[in-house]
Length: 95
Image (cartoon, rainbow, N blue to C red):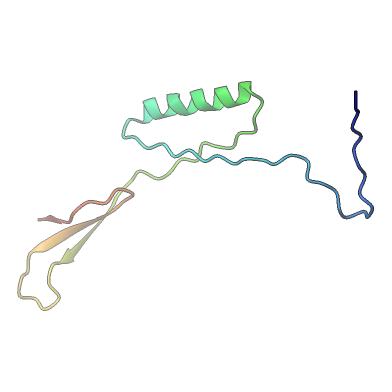
């Protein structure tokens, strides 16, 4: 039966790394905030049961910014277009 002892480095700055950490990022998106919070809580509870280090959740903004601008810079077509700047991409809507 063989036994293995830890080999000490010859120089002070050459220690072996302890453990390699794996970072996992999960992105959840939904219109239903209540269900999203429930799923997020379940994930955090499961990770803490396994004694993992958890950061989060990080909530993202849900409001949309509406900017009304002219459709054509030359002024031929004076209809206005509503441009939506949000996390989801959507086509401009004519007003």
